[in-house]
Image (cartoon, rainbow, N blue to C red; front, side):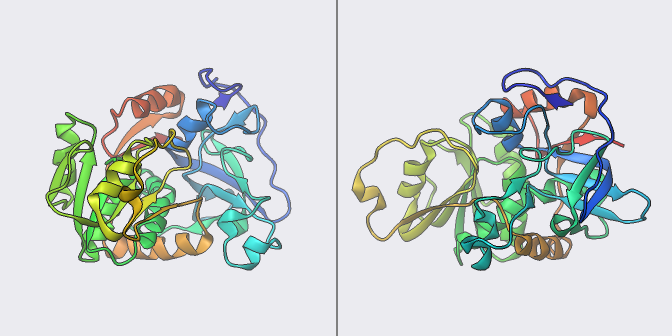
Length: 316
């Protein structure tokens, strides 16, 4: 399924099989998660994708002519030489290439990926269930680490990432407070099912102060709302790659040594740590599966908040 121009529906196409270069793996795609980042690329909110482009960066695949599965995440290549790579911040590499953005991704039957950026997948996860771990899980895990040792944790936007993070947070003994769109009683019930002790509208204040909050919804107005919800010295983590403009707010919202920070991409260390942790929790991924040819439908369902958990394309 090919993106020719932002805003145009993906086009079903027969493409030549991709050729693996030096250090790359030739992969038969089994499943690929549908991420909000795909939607940002589709809408032109991320400005420089390779076009035409095969989207998709939560790839579960089988190495062709080998009997092993691998997972391919958003981070597809770094130079290993720049100041960021040398400082263990490869996620900030200025020359980084990203799967389904700079490199063709997993909305296809075959793909290639740099072997250094492929993960071994934990046993016990079928292809569809493993796909959301590769971005929703990894970015959520990095955001949770940035939240520090917060005991009371707010999650704004209870979708693919938050439903995984909530399980990890509860495993770690944290108390979870979930925020959804106004009127989303189904999403709030889903959050409580996964261990949230309170779930309500993002327009509400939680019943007590939070130590930290993670914002998964790409809505800038949630930043001042989250600042009002966290205690002094609390942390607000913005986990998305794109967000609408943050409105101005009084300095007193931030004062008291509150912190706002963002999560940018992921590192291979994040992936190794999270994929080792997931089966110990154990993380259970809730998903809705679509055939590859229904990728446009999956993106639109995601846009309108109609996906329960994560959306995944069934490829093979």
